[in-house]
Image (tube, rainbow over all chains, first blue to last red; front, side, top):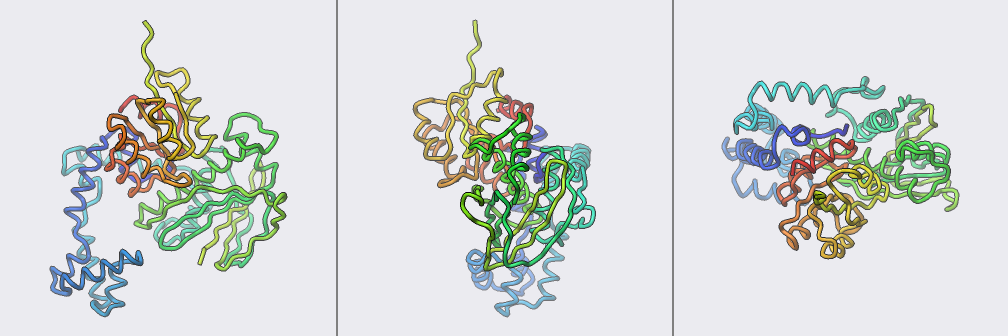
Length: 287
Length: 121
C-alpha cells in the first residue's frame, strides 16, 4: 500500500479511467478560482499587479498572498478574506468527479471512506502524536512515512528510541542511503545503518537470505529508501507542498573513511529500534 | 495454438525493481523482452525490441521518466506506457497522464496490482 492522492487511489482501483481523472482535474481548475482572480474580482488588485505577483511566484515558488503582502499590494486581513472566499467556493476532486457524472455521490462516499481507512491504517507512534499533516514539519512527515513503510514492506514495528534536532553534524554508521528532495526547501533524507541491518532489510526486500552487501542487495535497500521518499513527496502533495525526489545514493562509509557528515544547514535524527536491527533516519535541511 | 504474449520493456534505474517486475510478470501473458536503466538506454533499445508496452520509472539519473515518456511516444505513438514510480504526487500523476501515459502505478505494489493495470490498458 502506497501513500497516494485520492485520484491515484481511484485510478488504481479501476473506479475511474485516466481520461476521466484528467477531465475532472481540468474541471476543478476551471471552477476553483485563483487568489489573484478573486483579488481582481473584489477590486483589490489590477491584472498587471496579479501578473507581477505570478512572475515572482514562478521565480521563487512562494505563495501568492505572501508576495502580495511583501509588495504592499494587499494587507494580511485582505488575504485572509480572499482565502476564505476561495475555500468556500473550492471543489475537491471527488466533487468534480460527481459533477462530471464519473462517480455517483454514494460511490464517492464509499470510496472516500475506504481511502481514508487505507491511508490511516497502522498508525505509527509518531503519527498518533502528530495528526494534522499541515502542522507537521516535512522531516516529521518523512519519518512518519518511513515508519509506515517499515511496517508495510518489512513487516516490522519500529519504535522511536531517541530524537535529536538541529545538529550541525551526523555520526555515520557503516552505510548511508541518501536521497535529495527538491521543493520550496531542499532536503537530504538519509537512512544510516550497520551492515547486519542492511543485510536484513535486503533479505526482506528480495524475499531471500542475503549474506553479503552486493550490488543487488544495495539496490534493494536503495529502492526501499526511494519508496519512502517518493511516498513522502506524495503525502506532501496532498497538502499542496510540492517536492520532487532525485535518484538515491549509497555510501559505504567504512571503505570511504567517512565517519561524520558536516552540514551548512542542520540535521535532525530519529533513532529507531526493531527486531531486525537499529536504524537511524536523518533529515538534513540543505541551505 | 499458443497465445502470443504481450511484449513489455521495463525501465528503472534500480536493478532490484527490474528483477521484481520480471518475477511478477513471469508465467503471465506479459513477457519482459528488454530492460533499461535510464532514459537514454530505453530509447536506444526501443527500436530493437519493439515492445507493446513500456513500464517506466520517473526518478532516474539523467533524463527523468517524464521526459523519456514524451520521447517514447513521439518515436512510437502506438506504444502503451505505464508509469511505475514511488513519486505518486498529484502533479506527477496528472502530468504523466496528460503526456500520454495509459496509467500510473505507485510503488510499493503487489503482483496482482501490476497485472491488473496491464490487463486494463
